[in-house]
Length: 282
Ligand code: F3S
Image (cartoon, rainbow, N blue to C red; front, side):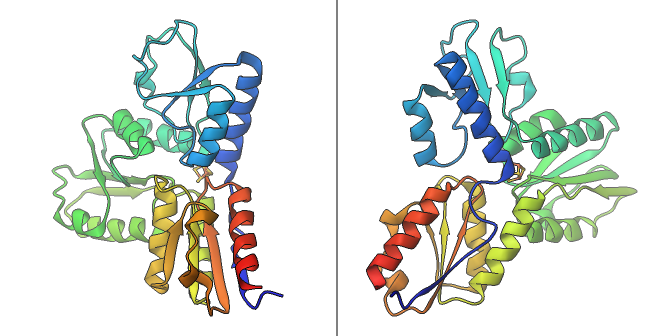
């Protein structure tokens, strides 16, 4: 019997938005045989590979030569609606309803003339889409330092966040902005519930174990942030993609190992890691 106790976060595996996006993509592929996706449908290379084998073709740009009536899948993190405007394609929208909600909030804030602060990573597709919707009256801030040096230049400020941002970073940025000069400051906690629960539970487990493994795609921003959150309480935190990334130092002589995952990590990846650790320590 393995001497290692492995604690898997109860908030692991696919989130509701990712599950929903994959179900829509599966149904579209079944019906059409070939579907294009604007960027990877989710940030997990193993899952994306499986879909590519079934006919999902990833394109970076809508201008890529696609037939007029091609089926284009909008990923779960959404895109700027302007991208598809005037395109004669069939749009299959897998945008998570919680991402759509932030998009609606941003559109409304723009209409009401707010300077819109988006807490998040400006390179992430969800944030790019939000910034596109917010127009010229928007700024993306990723951390407290950036918030400290930011000069609003407007007295009406509204703050929203990327759905997968760190909740503590969101609060830190908000408190920095509250020190600025303003006549109105409103904020919307648009970090999704699943992200908050995932971060809290991973942090709790990381504080109780010798090694914390965070499983997820290397390009998955929410997995990297989750690993950063865990590393704050446990410096023996490692971001791995699959069981192939396991190293002996992660489990040799260890009694308690924690596991958490990003929102786009399939349950099969967790099973593989747990089995490999058990095999190696039995
Ligand atoms: Fe949606 Fe939250 Fe997942 S915004 S895609 S449920 S991480």
